[in-house]
Figure 1 (cartoon, helix red, strand yellow):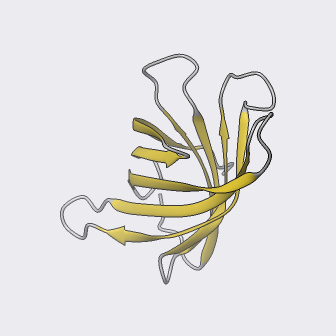
Figure 2: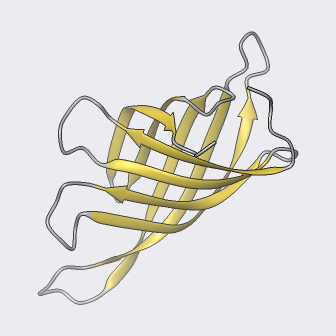
Length: 132
């Protein structure tokens, strides 16, 4: 695979294969290959009844670092926030934190983990699902 230059889009699926019903992270990212800056959005889906099955994180940002030795691995760290509404009978909402850590090859496949609203999902497989 040739190395992308300029600005390109990548779509990733991050999921833990060990148990059924686990949250699945969908990432839609724009990557600046020159600076290593990444921005985009995320969606977490899980087999739960509405309104709890889908969490949308509208804006995430981060950067890519290269290991720079041997087989070059891309280390990607992304963060963002999203609004969580408190279920009744309480009233209100709050900002929850979201973060992702990925170790991927140049074709954006590899391993990773993510954290949202106090939940930590580790040992995930990262799969590039961009249409080529």
